[in-house]
Image (tube, rainbow, N blue to C red; front, top):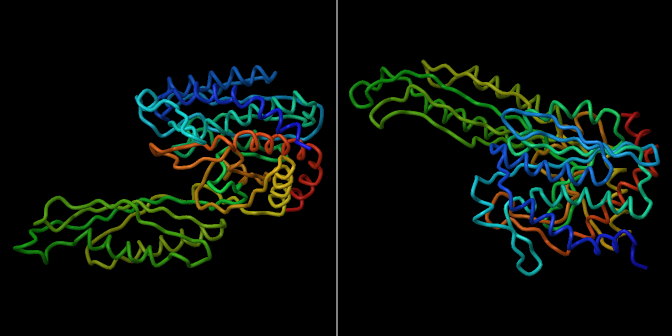
Amino acid sequence: MTDPVLTYAREQQAAFLADLAEMVNLDCGTEYKPGVDAAGAMMRRHLLSLGAEVVAFPLDDYGDCLLGTLRGSGEANIFLIGHLDTVYPVGTAEARPMRIEGNRALGPGVADMKDGLLAGVYALRALQALGLDTFGTVHFFCNSEEEVGSPMSRRLYPRIAAGCDAALVLESGRPNGDIVTARKGSAFYTLKVMGRAAHAGVEPEKGASAILELAYLTIGLHQLNGIRPGVTINVGVVQGGTKGNVVPAEASAQVDVRALTRDDLALVHERIQALVARPTVPGVAVTVTGQPDNPPMPRTPANAALAALALAAAEAAGFAVGENLSGGVSDANFCAGQGVPTLDGLGPVGGDDHSPDEYLELDSIAPRIAMLARLIHLISVRYGELRSLRSSL
């Protein structure tokens, strides 16, 4: 027997695609506030149509964030999260509006993550239409600057997430359909080396090469890879020097660190401080700025229980999903950092994000909406278990 939630989602797919095209065909690059606010206005309209109360969080340098609050007939409190912004410059939407090719929709932001925002809306519509809106409250947050690390909205998450039984982040499912049940945490550092300039041909001995010191530091940093399972360190940007015949007096590097636990991030932080405190090249001085920035999202017992509900929700919709550990960070990290059971990758399936080939798989839309709706309903039924697991940590 076909799941009625899936049947409803299939009946709504044409409307979903029309709404998706409207949103994808907006320029929503993070720095383009008018476009992000236009996408926010669309989401406001959708949330109001559900009967939600909508509050805006005005921002000067970015689009405004939105919070829609929808009340149901039960007790569970659920946090849905998606972002309005993309990485694409102004003019991209006009040059590459959404188009359909076979089983794929293509366009800027089609999978990252306009589809996820709308999947949340349509899942809630399905629950209302079928009388399954047995949650207590759904808080639907629309972030406006996720693509640059959520510098402002991350401050809002603690108070919204505090009383929630689960946080569901609506990023697209992995290309194989997996949901994300754990994410690494991250830290970002900038190293600056000050040396001493000298003529490289006439009197190089009077110089102190900042680039040479940075080379030693780069090797030392990369040797920290794997000091704990899952720890990665990458020196991604290096700069330095002025001319080929001058011993370089300055050099700098940007360093990315990922780890599975807070303790591992702290260990790497200590090792980086120790490295820069002992320069190899005489006469140079090294400074480092940065610290752990995004907390890990571990697969806690509560997360495992929430993942089991997601797998059951997918099964009810007629398909199977797996679990994924991601080295990337998202807004899920901030919710997990508050101790809230959190899942990510719950939107329709897509890929090639941030590229001209970004795509959404059309045949994943209805099943993933049905899975999300069923998951919200199952959380409403099993919220006591999640509360118990969370309080036991």
